Amino acid sequence: MNAFWKEIEREEQLSNLPPKLKASIQQARDAYFIRFRANRNDVIENLTGGNRARISEREWIRTSDFALRSISRISEIALDLTETYAAERAADAARHLYIAVFLMFLSVGLASFIALYVILRVIRPLKLITQTMKTVAGGDFEHQIPFKDRDDEIGQFAGTPGYFRPAPSRGYA
Image (cartoon, rainbow, N blue to C red; front, side):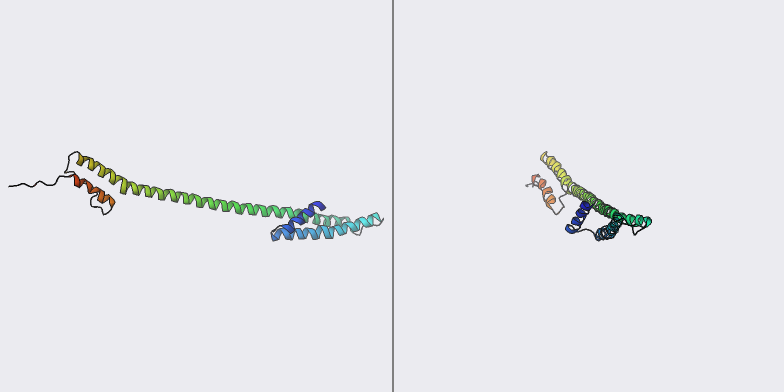
């Protein structure tokens, strides 16, 4: 028992234990190692000297039970604190998971929106303009050119098939 208790005391000195656990260790130190051991030494001394113990059997059982319970209480409190700590870490992990999943869905949604925007505002117009350029290159100069009214690069690009159209012929009289 002494070797285990020395280990507990060393841990108490070296680490930053929670106050509840430190109080439990102090209570066990007082109940078992100070009061109970003093009573036990007194009983042993009286009995080895041929005298009766100064404590009744019932009182002996009550004090020894209390002292032993104070020692077992240390492990109960340590386990309770560990369980609480684990539950807190699990709650933190769950919260971080929910945040990560939310951010993932947000990222996927944003990427999908950007992809849809690029498809509708850039790729689709470029495909239609390319088809128009092929039509104009094939000789159909009357084909309507899409998106030439846009004020961006797509509008500028849409105006290029117009350069392939022949200038209106002027009649000479």
